[in-house]
Length: 119
Image (cartoon, rainbow, N blue to C red; front, top):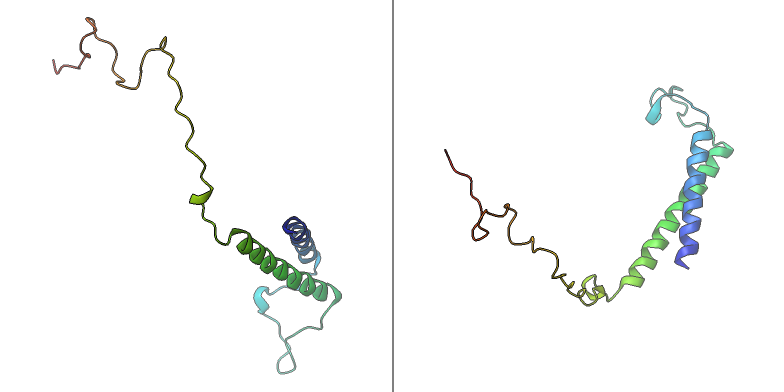
């Protein structure tokens, strides 16, 4: 069910983007410069405007539906509950040198590490 709603949501998003891009540019972004004085600054609703509103309402409905489905699926569980047993400790190959102890190069007599001097 979640996959169906998610697919519909994706198609609505793509359609909404397309319809908004196809609308006629009326200028004056955010309703500025509408003119008309005391009559009305609101233009007549066009078919593209109606389609945009329908797609926007459907997009919001699918968003709410996806939120409800997701909350229902995760109810009573925690991320920490999903953690399985820790992975097994890797066996170290005895033929390889142990490089975890030090990053310093080996000393000449191999008993102590070489330390830089302040000469």
